Image 1 (cartoon, helix red, strand yellow):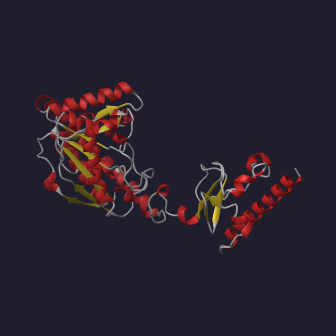
Image 2 (image 1 turned 180 degrees about the horizontal axis):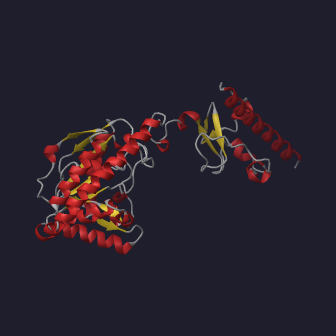
Image 3 (image 1 turned 45 degrees about the vertical axis):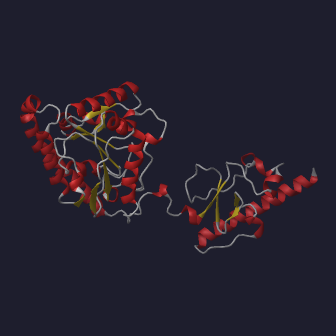
Length: 363
């Protein structure tokens, strides 16, 4: 039909005007309002954006400018479907994103200052300190291990005391830790399930300074690391093979067995480190079968063990997830919330999340 060809030509001209206007705006650094005809193309669910950014795919990087390909097969919706334009509807593979909504999104991570040489130097010094102190203290662990197995096989308080000294010596030159709610911690000999948000590699160091003999859960590959992996074995850290249902089941059984024998266990319910500092989804809130993270509240409910929620603040800003080679200047705050007793696993999950998130939103 001739009218369809004319309509398609006018739409392509409007698209070209929009692309050129956006490119000119980016090159000059001064916002350049697009033409009225271009604004007709810049709608998403009935909303017209003043300074849009057109992305061909929802998987494209945020705030990226990807021009429309000259090959017409990449934009087949421009031909034979004028109703999309009239109804202000677009297919899924065309995403229009406002520059205002793109700024400061959760996927962008922490708003950190520009990476400086000082942060890299501090990072190198951090690992030098932790390595040298670990070598010396590991010797003490190795010498005392036979006695620990003989008199304190499950809690291993001697090893955890050495781990506390190691963590304190490592972090002391680089950042200060402030504790709040220490009175909420159960007595050292009382078994409990501890849960916390997870922001950084520094979370482990910070939690070891609490002086409680809880057992972390760790990937089996880390046990192969010299010194650190061997020390984890002495501490009784629970190994886990991800995506292995048998390993997950063994992990859950071992956690409950340790609690029955007087030890405590520690879980990160998010299952991974947060890159933006916000509290991620607890795996107990999802219909997943990953026992390593889903078992945190189930273990507490089935063993009738007190649950202790903990909020960590600041570790992700000092050493962000994925940037373990740097140590920024900052401080860390640890908030221990009131213990939660004897409830169903889903109730424990909701109450623990509420307690942890209440402090994060205020920081």
